[in-house]
Image (cartoon, rainbow over all chains, first blue to last red; front, top):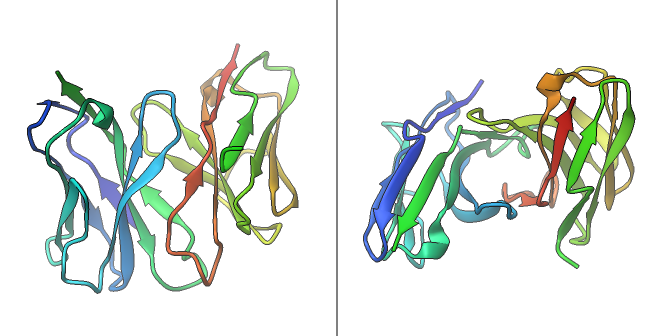
Amino acid sequence: AQTVTQSQPEMSVQEAETVTLSCTYDTSENNYYLFWYKQPPSRQMILVIRQEAYKQQNATENRFSVNFQKAAKSFSLKISDSQLGDTAMYFCAFMKLLGGSNYKLTFGKGTLLTVNP
Amino acid sequence: ETGVTQTPRHLVMGMTNKKSLKCEQHLGHNAMYWYKQSAKKPLELMFVYSLEERVENNSVPSRFSPECPNSSHLFLHLHTLQPEDSALYLCASSQGEGTNTGELFFGEGSRLTVL
């Protein structure tokens, strides 16, 4: 079974600064996806960024980028130029790429990020 | 219409009540999910339906009963719940097996309180 660990329950950052959220995972699979989802207060959870394990290049989406270290099973999220709207719970998630359960995601406990003005 | 809509948003029920949570998706997806979100715990996958067939039942107590009458609607029927079942219940949808890239589209959730 896969496990996802987010070691930082809460973090805070000043507006316009950069923050990095940590995530580690445990799996015996070689092919899989990793995700960061964002859940703003009282709003829907949405996908922030996705990384395919077979790709060496780190995924980027505007101000969001990841540092994917496959051997270390580490998948951190960097948010640059933090904005007040980035305040949310961030969840790291793992999905197997192939097999009958390829739709099944395993989530971490989440990191509550607060962006301060 | 938002992509995934859940009703009611808030529900308070006694342990002897019977109620239902409803989820509707307008995205043309063919897989739907129920997740339970409790404080300080990872999201727990409860049920998965693919093409209206249940493909995952994650050891959920029988007091939770899912129903998927078609690919756009998903229900969670609740009866004789316990206070520890109080949580945020999230519905999600995706493209489904074979074409799924892992992105789930979530509703805003139904906040359930069991007295």
